[in-house]
Amino acid sequence: MRIATWNVRTMRTGLPDTCGGYGYAQHLRKTAVIDAELSRLNISVCALQETRLPDEGSLQESSYKFFWKGKDFGDAREHGVGFAVRNDILSAIETLCGVSERIMVLRLKSSLGHVTLIAAYAPTLKSSDESKEYFYNQLTETVKTVSSSDRLYILGELKIFARQLFNENVFLAPLLQINRTEYFLHQIVMLADLSCPGIEQFLIKASNEEYFKSPYRWLILDTDVGAYKFDLFQKLNMPLNSDVVIAKKVNEENFQLIEAYKISESSDVIYSTRGAWRPANEQKNLDSPKIFIETRGNTSVYMKEDTIRKNVMFTKYGVIEDYRDSKIISVRRKNLRKHPLTMVNVITDSNETRKHLDDRLNLHQDSISKMSYMVVKICFEMLNSTERRIFTHTWGYKDKNGNWQGIIDHLLKKEADLGTLTIFTQERMKVIDYIAMVGSTAVRFVFREPPLALLENIFTLPFTGAVWLAIAICVLGCAVFLYITSKWEATVGMVMSKNYKLL
Image 1: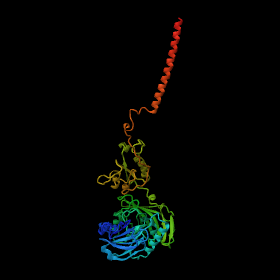
Image 2 (image 1 turned 135 degrees about the vertical axis):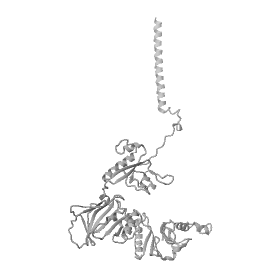
Image 3 (image 1 turned 120 degrees about the vertical axis):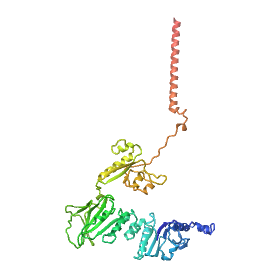
Image 4 (image 1 turned 45 degrees about the vertical axis):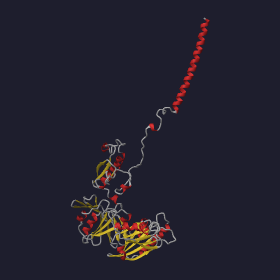
């Protein structure tokens, strides 16, 4: 059975059935469009939100029958929930109940038992707190009416209530998916018992499907007192961000809690004692030795620290001794033991950048790559890892065939662990993770200056106001100079004429 959920916005076009003939309106109905799409995807049952149909009722299409629950006829056409059930499983419906215009319940009989589906349309973030609280209480009461033997699925837009529903032991995604990152999944602990038959094949399959990666958490019980099962855990891929705890039985009542992880898929497993558990009625000295267990090749090495006292928690289930220096995994796992980490650097200006990544020469060339590399180099040293560098000439774009190039291609092929700071784009965010901004970036437009002849008359352009002022000053100065010269010449001529007459 394939189950889906769909916010359809509305289930009708708003056109009357008489518009263009009944067949025309039948083709335009939104339910006909939904019917065709669900048939294409081979969906068995689909929960619908925002049906916006009044009251409650049903409608038969070619492949599915639609059920809905909405507001009364006199109210605004908003909200509304419903179900689209494929015709061949209509006989499996046992009960169908519309709780409100936001909640509808469908109970089906299947080969695995009864299945209860709840279609829910939660208030938006802008809704009042009263409406949110009313919906949450109504949904909680509806969930409580479901039989404990039923498989329960809540379908709809419920992200704003995820935390509240989790506190009520209601999960929005009861089926785990590979490497999911929803925030509530880290609160789910998967329990495995090494004494169960077929457990080795089960753990290897989970490892191959990446269920040991973050955010999944594991508690593995080893109730056999004696040797550790190092060979089994060596076959599992437990990366650096995994949270795997082995509860190893050390005697009749006490357990030792051991963390296990790998630096890389091919490296040896690293074990460290995380804590210990003992029954609450057992009185023991709280000062316990902290033992680190590590495998190097086929050899197990036991390292024992001085006796220390760690955090102790007393619960009704027993006493837990916590040996961790920090509860943050990344803080406890800073030593990568010279494991190589590869960084891909983008070079667009000059190939000389390869020689001057960290010597502060030619800072104007490939400045973003140099800035990113200097920050990452410090991180490599802090993590005690070995640095590897590869280079590319593009930031990562899709070619005409839809394949990524440049830095994104190296990351997707796992040829590099991290790369140079690159600009956020919606397409890139779908395939890679951005971890931190090592510097500020901005987008600027550079316009080419148009030819001067398109803007001005190049022959009159030199004659600006300053030029005309200079010409006027020169003309005025020349006029004054000529006037003074002419007056002086006339005066000198008259004096010489008088002197000649006297002689």
